[in-house]
Image 1 (cartoon, rainbow, N blue to C red):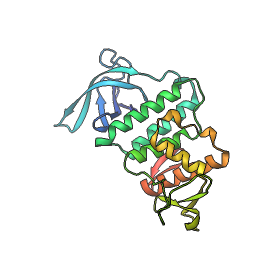
Image 2 (cartoon, rainbow, N blue to C red):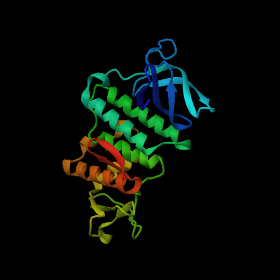
Image 3 (cartoon, rainbow, N blue to C red):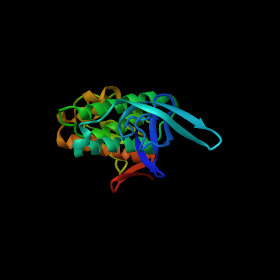
Image 4 (cartoon, helix red, strand yellow):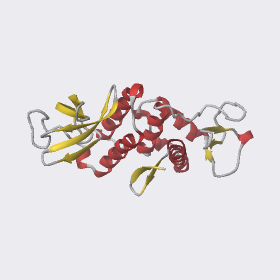
Length: 240
């Protein structure tokens, strides 16, 4: 569940990320009071098994019943972890996930939430890395394997650039100037490729130098804003 709100006195609306259809919004009549049909499971971040009915005449979906599969106990008592989780869930809402890509988005989101439930500290840059991976899975993957100008492959020991408007790399021989060319050390580049192709358990940005982490964060933030039109400003996501 990505979002929950009150609808009239006893009713609630819920926004769900489903395995087959992506994002759905449904109304849970009596959701704030019913313990038989919803079992107290209507909370943000919960994984639920539910039954939804289309009320075509009124043009909405009704949540008939739901049972809890997995909750987020640790996150409820840890503000930092809860903040990271909410950041990821809000990004999903703004981006929108539909159709064939919904299954991958759901699996990735559940993996990230499970990671935040563990004892170990959350990996640095987790929310930004989540944005890169979700964007890549939804068909907005930056090309991180060779130079967009000459086709040369990336090798260790070289500092590259990320060309923002083309969504790809420039090798040392094709370097550019201007605000669209972002510096990217090979270690940063290699780490971003790992994020695109691996489980969140391997997103250990702590192995990067602070300057390399800043490069990764800047590239992801700029890419998402330029190519997806989503910016993080004043504590919320907005379309730009």
